[in-house]
Length: 554
Figure (tube, rainbow, N blue to C red):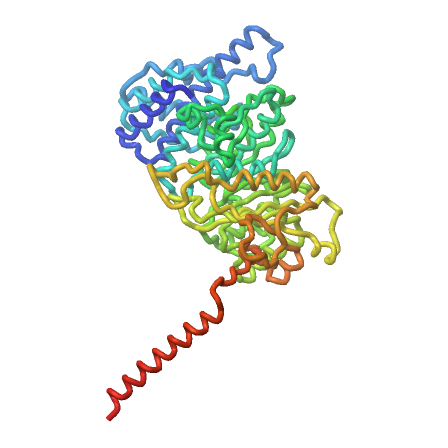
């Protein structure tokens, strides 16, 4: 993204801030409305061109969004308005029209349903409209359009409202790399927020189907520019540099298949809109993103939503919260009221046979001793293939939260492959302890943690995982739990244990429970000398006590 575009976006956010729209979630939502209206206008111009060129042969995409009398709702028809006339027209006519397109364009109607223009100062609205009007989105690549929204989302770093903070890029990238989604996989996030996991999964797939994918550091391309290095030079200097790949996906044989395979739900309509706009700007216009409560029978889920099963699930659901028992879905494999257990239950239930899930969970879920905790872990371990437990450093979600977390990676076995207890209990679970994630664990600067690319365990984790996966999950890396290593042994990050051992520990999944121990170094001092020194100290103490006794005795 060039500097001119960055400055334009900064001006828009500054204008809104100065105009009283100071909540980052709100002003990103307001910008989303206006960007969407501009995108729809550009899409209308494209459809008009198709209609002129193809006439009656134009396909469904040739149907106009603003036919005849509705043309006055197009961006190009009202962007020249100003003052209260502009504000009132957008608020009272454009928004209601967009929300009315339930039959013609259901996705657009859903986006604008209950939408409220909260930019009440007409002069502020005019300035924002003029700035957005100067951006020709049709001429920008999908990457740049995606970067626009990623840049706007950095403002959420200033506020963690109701736990609605973004999962850090390094963790999202790690989880996507572990599951390695492909074209045709249905991909789901039941608490999708701004759509970060869905976007990263799409980028991962596009890179696979690009002739020349680009490798990018998790800190962004500008980080490289500031260092004056190529990605190869940076990786040579910093072997632990974490990267991801991106590309245009020009070899994707069916773009519609990719779009139709993306599913996201969020309980907040604001977040749903932001997530949908994020996907639109990344080229995914037909994703199934909706507002609903994934945990509730009365949360807006349809029968299709409840029956659908997914090949890939990626999520970092909210940890806090307790639901009323009457509202909770009856089809979940837990009777708990705690949201973290319910969300894990949702993902277990929604996973297709042969599908895989990576989910961030609070560490308390891994070792909690309530019957609900133990029973859900038992079902996960016994009825699914628990492949890995990744322990994350405590500071990974700073400055929003300091809660210690982990990532569970599991598969649902293919249909008809249930194993007997003896065979199942011989299977192994891999544990990896991430101590550093590429950011300082303690410092906070400018609303975030400073970069420490030379201290990042995640690239090693991914390399070890890829070798493990290549072996069909037979050659497990690391050391067996319970091993006592000789004093001075080399530092290690990963280990494993069997399902049988886990079952014997109340299905406790805390990585530290099974971590091999290193023997303490035997002291090098002469034992005779140590004994003599101890005796000498004892004599000094006895002499002191005898002297004290003489002084106090009557």
